[in-house]
Amino acid sequence: MSADPPLGLLAELTHRCPLHCPYCSNPVELVRRERELTTDQWRSVFTQARALGVLQVHLSGGEPLARRDLPELAAHAAGLGCYVNLVTSGLGLTKERMTELAARGIDHVQLSVQAADRQRADAIAGTRAAAHKRSAAEAVRAVGLPLTVNVVLHRGNLDEVGAIIELAEELGADRLELANAQYYGWALRNRDSLMPTRGQLDAADTVVRAAKARLAGRMEVIHVIADYHDSYPKPCMHGWGARQLTVAPDGTVLPCPSAHVISTLTFDNATTRPLAEIWYESESFTAYRGEDWMRDPCRTCDRRGVDFGGCRCQAFLLTGAAENTDPVCPKSPHHGVVTGILADSASRQVLVGVAELGFRMRSEER
Amino acid sequence: MPAVTAVPRLRRGVRLGYDPVRQSPVVLFPEGVLLLNTTAEAVLKLCDGLSSLDEIVTGLREQFTGVREDQVGAVLEFLADRHVVSWEDV
Image 1: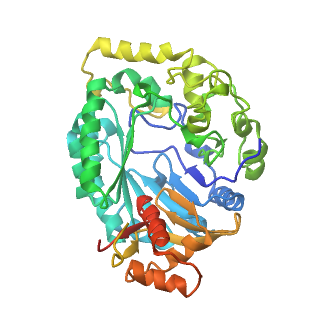
Image 2 (image 1 turned 135 degrees about the horizontal axis):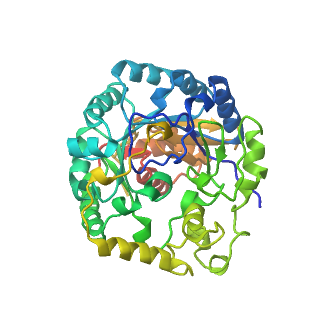
Image 3 (image 1 turned 90 degrees about the vertical axis):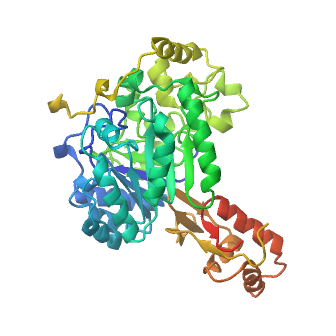
């Protein structure tokens, strides 16, 4: 199976983060500071990624501002001709830092927001985070860069999605990404507490649709719906190893940010193998590329070119084999696993407060 | 179709470039990349935030033959859908 060059690189510069969100997309086993790539190693990753075809670089984490060399890394990626996105919690994003980062080549800032209500937002983040969002957004606007506000939706904040949209408007966002929690790593561990009800999702959907119409032409609203509740699996990553790669803080190269959960795969490291070889030839990137790996019902399904069999990580986590159809699909022989989880979650009918969430903590803090 | 007097403008953070790897002009923007053909590149280069659709069509006719206003309008509508351009005066 031949592949096109990748368009995007998600560079997880560090797993260090001042926030402790219970749905964090980082692995449960976080990479410690001593094992993070050096400045020169990251520069080499960016250079190789550009040569390979990457045009969008997402400087992410953890909190990328925790890396002192962030301005140098941004400048290197920008100098290669890449579009450079900063994905941040906003904590530590002062006007001075933002000014320097913009001068070094950051093109766009993605700012996370946990909730509209301050106390609730701080409770989800596990720290006093909400107060920093306004000043961070102001710093972005002051340098004239486009701003995306991104929000992970779950049972604890779905009911205030209208207020969240208003907050994004107040912050001056050009784009708003509302993404329902996806259950891998930390979020899988906290799934019972995060899982919304069908009623919550339907109510939020009505609010978001109205806002999209009202804001058309002013603020782009992207709504990523909750996939356990959806009728079809999500077209995860637009296909395995098709458009994007992720490099973890220690240099591990992943086909998607969650791929580390597939314990049957071996992943290469950018410090020991050329990135181009990893993209085109490695076991991990070729394993589920294209359609040859598919089993029934995907193999003969007329939607296989639409959703690519759904998510390999979800198939692995819920069925034990990544080659299986994503069990969110009603055609999957394992679909009962998903309906069972939803029924179980609905039957409990308990109101779980955020205090019951398992916050993301470093292993030494647990 | 937008009015001929409507003025398309590149949105904040949109950047035109060239990718030597794919040997193609590209437009880069928040969370997006589009590979451009020669026509789309020429249209975007004329989006200076001042020129209206009919002025852009005039500009294109200086470079190409057989330029159709409806096709230029369609290219710009597609780019507006992708949040690459916005219309200033519809």
